[in-house]
Image (cartoon, rainbow, N blue to C red; front, side):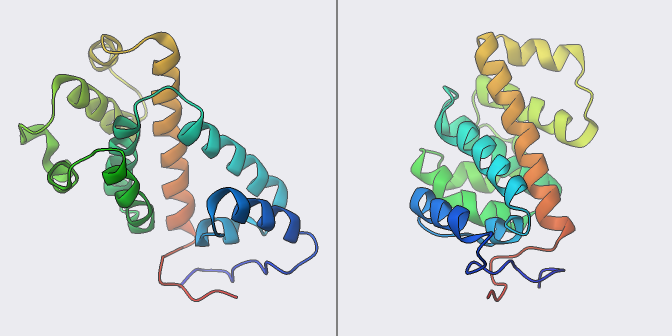
Length: 175
């Protein structure tokens, strides 16, 4: 159960943004219902994550591998539950999703995926990226995509930390 109650969607200060989220995303997920305690934060979050997921040139399958690996490292089941279907829709096989816990020892991942997963790993676990890890990843991307990849890893670390600090889970009861 979440540490604080979810925001009420019928509150006058929340309703317009809740309606926008519903229009754009189909519903107000637990994450956004918690964020709506602060409409300015929710609005900024929505803009940032929408840009990451829908307006960048980074391949969707790579993006979702990153998100799923971040969720796994950070122990964020809600994040993984929300993104597993998206990952499969983007073309990530169930076998690859199942192998993310031991990707270094798995032959399912190609050189580009391995470079991305290594970059994700060190950014998430250590923050500081060794030159060799960065150089290998950079051989696969243009500068704009390096920015997008780095922002994706950073953004979904933010998401998992928010979710886990407030103990937001898919099976939580809501208002």
